[in-house]
Amino acid sequence: MTGGYDSTNPSTGGLSPAARRTAAFLAAGGLLLAAGWLAQPRFRPAKVEPESQRVLFPELSDAAKAASLEILTYDDELATLKPFKVVQSGGVWVLPSHDNYPADAKDQLAAAATELVDRPVLDVVSTSPGDHETYGVIEPDPEKIKAGMTGVGQMVEIRDASGNRLARLIIGKEDKRPAGGQGGERTLRFVRKAGQDPVYRVELDTAKFTSKFDDWIEKDLLKLSPWDVRTLVIDDSTASFGIDEASGRIMVSQDRKTRIDLAYDDKDAKWSLIKLEGFGKDKKPVEEKLGAEQELASAKLNDLRNALGDLKIIDVARKPSGLSADLKAAEKFTGDREAVASLAERGFFPFQSGEILSSNGETVVGMKDGVEYLLRFGNGTSVAGDAKGETKEASAGGDTTGRYLFVMARLNESLLEKPKLDPLPEVPEGAEKQQGEDKEGDDKKADAEKDGDKPEADGQKEADEAEAKAQAALEERRRVERENRRKEEEYDGKVKAAQKRVRELNNRFADWYYVVSDAEYAKIHLDRAAVIQAKAADAAAKPEPQ
Image 1: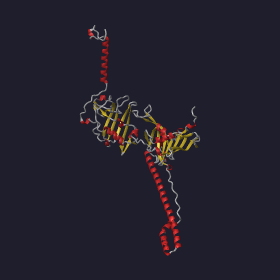
Image 2: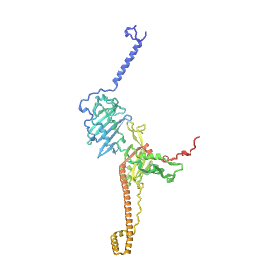
Image 3: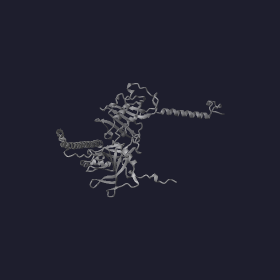
Image 4: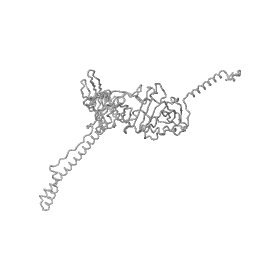
């Protein structure tokens, strides 16, 4: 017998035992495929008949009406809800989730609202509440969410200035299949209007609904141009604060290591060392010099300068009230134990003198316009990472390590080039009086020439020449005085402009501790080993390889 047919056994249809086994396997496989197909999440597109269901939110027809946006995200790993909100309050956009920190939200919120304006429904996926988990559109309700729950979506809610709800949407899983008849690659999502059962499929750009802090704030913290940096002072030190149990007083201990003063010449594009101080056991400064084989690490200093122009913050915390307009600690403030504790907790200690000591040193940045930034570095902290893992420096636990930053601005007139005033030319004594007698002299000269009195005329001529010289000297003196006055007024204008900028910056910095990542901290606060390096070996001095 060959092949799969058995002619000796008609009852089997002529199939051999091997062929019968193969057929049985194929039948079983078909049943498994059918079962898998039945179990797979699927939907049958339904025609969207009512006009009200052809777009998600008919009532949201104008993005300009949006006055608040709230986003509620569920973290599957931590089983926690992360709220985010931006609102317009008193004409200013703020982030309530971050102590009402000012938000740069006008365009951002308009873009989010526009994403839902006239948003068409492509398909009705399901009308059964039992499918909400399948499509990831379970409402993130804190009273109903339990640990281990899956299929929880992201809630997005938009309201107008009166608090009326314009849109409330639950965004679920992504559907990577193209919409029927549309073709192409588009971002499709399963969504559900909160409080309703139907699940829809829509095209949606979910990036517009970001809840990342740094997506909603002014990213340029210091508002400075790196090219305008003229001086740097790096104070590498540490300090600790504790409470004496016997007296209840706060004890302060400081360990100073190095203070480095640097200047940058933008014409030569070169850094120079102004002063280098080390600190001995007695904590007194000792001036030092660069060694013959040492030089400044210009590349690191340039990186520091550039990092200042792009300084990013990852979080904020509100300061206690009571600091003066120039962000110094007034005597009344230092007597407020709660306020002092707030600073000390974050690594800053206020003295009655007004000075504030920081736990991890300072960097002072001088600008060519006379504004000087004082960056104080405090204690380390951690910031919750993004639920979707978008925070690049997040640790395994979902947090980012950072450091508190206390920023203030002040005027430093030495950064402004003083006007070079020209010396005033000497003027012969009585020149101004002589100027008033010009008419009388001219009359006498005319009379002398008429009477033929030559000697008197010659004397008058000499007087006229002397008077002309005196007049020229007087005019030159007045010209120099005008030019010097112009230079002084120009300088005074620069001082006033710097004072105005300092006030504006401090008004911005006044209420906030900032948090920068450890990576940013490492860029803008260098120690001695990073600033001073060994000179590169002179290639010409090296012996030629044999």
